[in-house]
Image 1 (cartoon, rainbow, N blue to C red):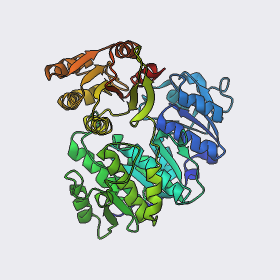
Image 2: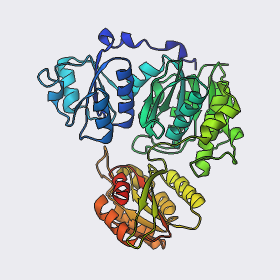
Image 3: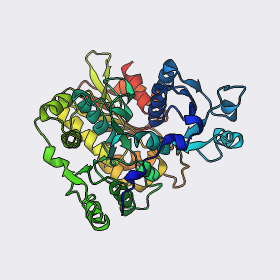
Length: 458
């Protein structure tokens, strides 16, 4: 397969008038908000809508975005939004009959999804893309810190808020850009990375991919776009990645980029603020990519030793103060896949070997919960106590009938205490009343569950 690298796209060819006014449907999303910040930095007029106000949308308003806290066709009408956009950017979560999409179609406003818009921006740079089932955000943020430390001044879009800057976007002035490359619906196919990091590959996004082989085929195609002067940074011996590299050699018509095994950069002694072997592997991947770019090891180590992490990646939120006195630490984590739960729990056990662990968990999507039900049970029983909220369905309907109550029952049968609560408020109240000084609490998952960490530490 010939690389498509030479087909990097001029954004102005696709957006009439250079797109001076851009409207984002779902601007409160982590990726959408970062891309909105990019366009703000470029001097564009940016508006956007979402289903509710959030900390992200409040920050965007402060930065100059016109925000609509509801999603309706009127947001694109000249009466409500006099700066009718040149282009509308939407997310994959939006239905095709979404009122704002329908309004844009009626008004003849060009539209593109987030990942196509991201590619049109990012492909103009020397692009470092971070892909993989787990660890993308942390590895991306680590790379940003390393390139900052080295003076490379990158532009960057990361799928989490960096603790260092309280933002998911970095405006740089160099040729370098760093972005996350999400595999959902093969969305990363628009990217043309010069350096591709693949942290790991597992069967994920079960509502879209048929099986692991289907997931691997997406990563294989993305890898084929890396130019011969570029590099793929990955675990070459990993059983889920090795077949991709082998196929790449067969089908690439003699074109061969550099392939680097990031495990050779694994440092078990480097002092990191984030516990767990998974974070050391993230650091190894970032190290290998930075080394390929010519950055010295002492610069890399300094950046990693000072790396402050990102929001909702084992983020310390504060303490519960029991009536009897003392403090119980509370962490918030985005872990919503069994492998991520395993890694986070292992990190907690490493940091707090003598404490009992209470996990507050909310599963993300019905399809993932149904397909990986037994894996969720296996990993959650590694906690001492599990508090469960209703499944966060996001874009899905519950066709399978799977419930959090079923997970609670299965975990209880394995001998681990498990309880179900309908709301974050009820679960937080129970924990406050029952927590012991010998405990640590970790809030995990997607959806409203993150509110529990705030309620516990108020």
